[in-house]
Amino acid sequence: MKFDTLTEFDQVILIFKDPGRRLTVRTVQEAATALIKDWPLDDGEEFLTAVKACLDVMTGKASSDELRSAILRAANEAGVAAVTALH
Image (tube, rainbow, N blue to C red):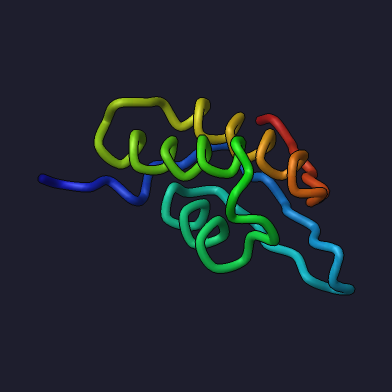
């Protein structure tokens, strides 16, 4: 099975509670890395939905816009500020 980890979406800047800690997420790979390595909660419903959305986009079962929305909901759930810009 081939995984597409480079699918892009409109960037989301994640601002964590730790001073100066920010991530810019614009690809499926960046989203998955942020969720697995940097996320403050790993048991929230929206977190799990976002992780699944990463896999679904990688395998062509969901759109990158669905992943972006899932990241925003997971950020809200975890208390991570998210700055968005639409192009």
